[in-house]
Image (cartoon, rainbow, N blue to C red; front, side, top):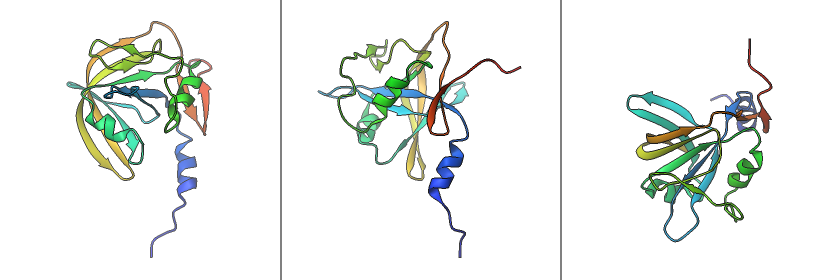
Length: 164
């Protein structure tokens, strides 16, 4: 007999680890681009340049994302929590009154933000109720100024200052 596992308590415990917030985007045929808020973004490798994020298996745009030729990742600034909330939902008019910026590879990006990564699919791995998507970074851009949007304990935060 195994120990009882409280998934809500586990999720709350994970929320004690602050994460940055990104929006993953990709082109789709005849529709608005895919756009989803993700807080599971991470670097994997410098050579080759690889990044990863995870997506829930039930995400409505997952099939189109997995079929995309390229995808973009936009790192949000502290003053872009409204964009994070907009793209966190499963459906709706995500791009209403907002136009994506097209990167050099043709993938849609959010602009301006702290950094953008244009990626080609590299690998997809099983991850329980999520898929782990690894991207090969083809191109990136960084902003000279700005602070990150941080998700912590179920809400958005900004970094108050640098640690000593």
